[in-house]
Structures are given as structure tokens and as C-alpha cells.
Image (cartoon, rainbow, N blue to C red):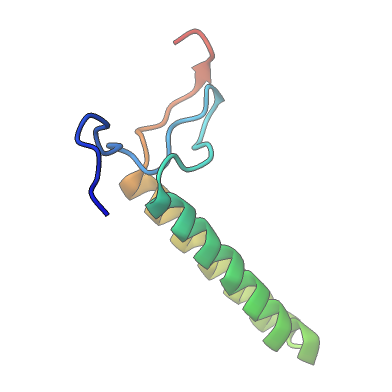
Length: 87
């Protein structure tokens, strides 16, 4: 598949939110892939850990997955600060 060069590659995978602090929904396929992997990881932890009554391990897995998601958003996302929507 040939990519249209008139559409530049997005610089950030996760744009900053318009209001508040943090990142919004992804704006490219790489960001969506990260979200899908995160959700699949949580689903797998739920199936294999929560279903076997290993709640501490499940919470630890969700915490690690969430920390990983935040790191990816920080590295590949738009720099974030508190925003009031006037930009």
C-alpha cells in the first residue's frame, strides 16, 4: 500500500486533552495498537488471575499494565499541561 505523502505522519500518537491534564484518544494506528494491547493485557489478567482468586496478582498486573501505558503516553504523546480549552 502506498502512503499519500500529502498527509504528514502524526508527530504524536496521543494528543493532549483540550480541557484538563493528560492525553486524549490516539490519533494514529500505533496509538490504537497500544490501547488494544493494554486492554488485551487486562482481559488476560482477568481471565487467568481474577478467575482463579488471585486478586493481589491481578491488581499488580493491572497496575503494571497501567504504568506501562502511562510511560508510552509520556514518551509518544504530546507534552501535557493543564489546559482550559482556549488553545
